[in-house]
Every structure is written in C-alpha cells, then in structure tokens.
Image (cartoon, rainbow, N blue to C red; front, side, top):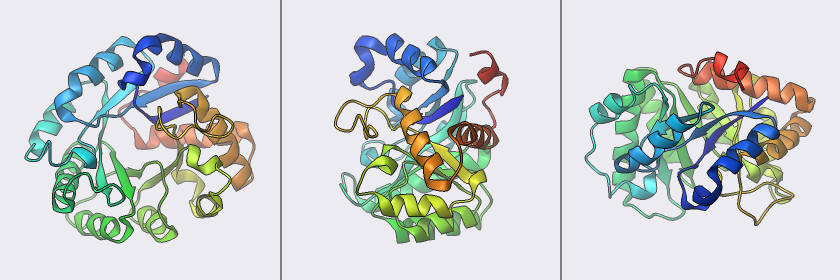
Length: 264
C-alpha cells in the first residue's frame, strides 16, 4: 500500500464528498493520508477530520503564505498542540519567493519557530520551499547546528543543490504530481539522485494533479500515478516503490503506528 504524505483534506474542494475521496484513496491502494495544516488558528478543522477517519493523520503549522497573519505564534504553542495523538508533524512552514505573499523576514522567522518545535518534539518538519533554495539551505544548515530535527522537503520543485543539502542534513524528499509533467525532466533527474531510503510521495491535493489528471482537482487516490512515475524514473517496480516509500514514511513519521496500515 501507498501513503499520501501530504494533502489538504480540510480545503473546501473536498467538503461535499470527503467520505468518497477517502474511500477512493483506499480503493487505489492508499492506506494512509496526512492532511497538512496551513494555519494554526484553523487547527480545529484539521483535527476534526483526523479524528473522524482512522487512516488520516495531521500536522500543525503555518504556511509561509500566512506567515504575517500568524506571526508571533510561539514554538511552545505548536509543541502543546502537537501532543494530540493524531498530530504527527510540524508545518507546513518554509519560504516561498515565487508568490511572496508574506514578507520574507516573517517567512524566515516563522520557519525558525517551526524548526524549534520540530527539534523539541522530534516530529518531522514539513518544509515548503519555492524559489528560495539558497536561503532555505542556509537556514537548515544553521538550525541543524543548534540541534538535530527531522524534516521533509515536500512537493520538491527546487534545484539539485537543495536536494543534495537536504539529504546531507538528514532530510527526506517528497515528490508530487509535478514529477509526472512532461516538462519536469529536471525534477525526474533530481529524483534519481535522492537515496532510495529518503524518498516519499504525495499529492498536495487538491493541487498539482498528476498526468493523466492534470488540470483537474487532485485527490489522494492519484498518488498512485506519481508513485508509478517515480518507480519508472529510478528503475524499480511499482510494488517496490510502494514498499520503499511506505517504509520511509514510517521511519520519518515515527508517531504514526505501523499497525495503522495493517488495519486498513
């Protein structure tokens, strides 16, 4: 079975048919899903979804787009919320210089706060990085020097140097539907360089639906399409990529009980 390590089941896109979306994921062989927080102040919505479905877990954090909106939330608050049994990660947080929806200094400040929470809880930090490779690598290296923390570079669309640095610092790299796009050869080339024990797959649903669904609403079931392309890219079978990425998921997201997959 596969794991969708990053989706947004609380978004309005799924409101009318969330049960059906989760059923379709199960039918497609997707045993577990992690629905990702983008606003700490909207955590109750995320928590309700994770509590309602046995195969759904969640995170707590502030997306860089909302860094100004939620500036000042301390690491201690993230740590406290992360004590909930269904919260298995911190984030997503990071740097987005493509849209620049929040001032860059506040994005960086927020990222460091989330790192502090990840360091204290030892829950993986889900990192959003877009067109900010040098600054992201510098912050990760600086913060890792203060004490180790687990992390994942989600929906990887950056350059080879950030992938290399992330792996060097002990991080994982997750690939989304972008991997399947015709014009994404550079991303596929990067995927070949990532050690197999650091690879994960995700949808980032409702965004970035993989081929052949590109342009439509994405959903967790479609992670199977991305996994198939990743398998072809690195030269393994689809069964093997499912085993590899699921094993990596449990190694990174240590709070998720392995029994959760067996019960699906």
